[in-house]
Length: 406
Ligand SMILES: NC(=O)c1ccc[n+]([C@@H]2O[C@H](COP(=O)([O-])OP(=O)(O)OC[C@H]3O[C@@H](n4cnc5c(N)ncnc54)[C@H](O)[C@@H]3O)[C@@H](O)[C@H]2O)c1
Image 1 (cartoon, protein in one colour):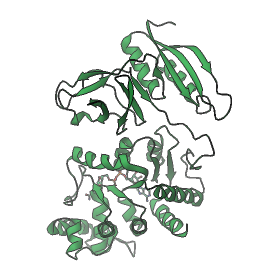
Image 2: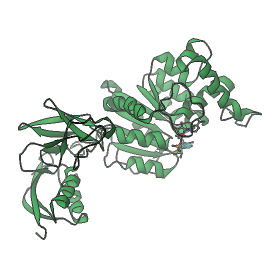
Image 3: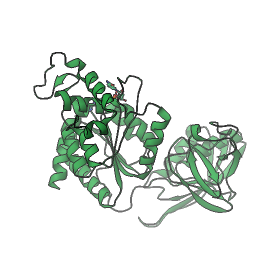
Image 4: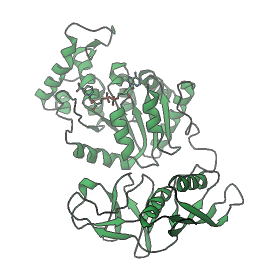
């Protein structure tokens, strides 16, 4: 043991076949820490869990704490059975120094000798203890004096393990590739959505304007009508261009029928925004008979909620767009915690924002024509996420057809 201070940690689970053990060792070495295997009991069959006891060492307390934080994400838990330590938040919007930063994995915290689940698993937040209960809290929401967990004692993170039996969603964990047979992948996505819906779980669709530009909004509307969309997340653009296409037959001035720019068409989206602002909002425009078809009309008439989050380059925006970023986060967060699946379609901004708010257990599919975007999202470190590099228009049409057939 080359280092000054140490902590013993236990890891239990399918350590070898899930690759957890090697990831822990790799991380310790990469962080310049040390480890000694004190015991390692390997499960005898495919079903049996393994258990390892490791002594982790670091150059000083801070170094050790950092290593423990990183390997804690793979389920390594200090053997010391003390309670989690808390420190009051020094002021509104400020977490105490050394606060425990959450992962998106299921987490428990030890309070009064009892393991209590942390409600609202989401990455990069703090944990507040209130009346014997624990929940995540964002930096912006923390209030002076709230008891916030610090350090890494009395915390337990449950890593995602590959299912022992045949994988539930077999296509998961497949490489991001534009060279896969799309029909097969889309068929699997359809079966997955059916299962999630059968279980009564909600499905989030995160949608960018390419869905409208490619003419696929009508296919997404089919999914809304069939009950596969529990909530839609997007920005100003997707709603604006959908409404532009309903009012003028163009998307960004390009005729949806002829595929050609129309004279004066570049102003259509501004006129569409102005019209909706005049009505007071999208739902009001539907009520007043101004907006009579399209994706946003379908959402309103089907009673499916949507969250439109603003961004710096928005025109207008539409009255429905939430321009305060923290309010938009809060509106999205509530839906993220309830989700069983999330389908992200051609928006880097809103897909990454949503990805960061989802618990790791949510089955996520990201579709984009740019492999870099898909890789970024698929790289959430779990087999729960799949990336599909393809045109979103073709994807949505095939998915809607497959779900109708299925
Ligand atoms: N007029 C406006 O107000 C206006 C216009 C555009 C964007 N915006 C806003 O700007 C923000 C970012 O916009 P965004 O989400 O469009 O941009 P983004 O750059 O975050 O994402 C666009 C993504 O779509 C992908 N894409 C493009 N065509 C595709 C296709 N055919 N198939 C699959 N993927 C495809 C791109 O690779 C890219 O990753 C949003 O909040 C949006 O509302 C506003």
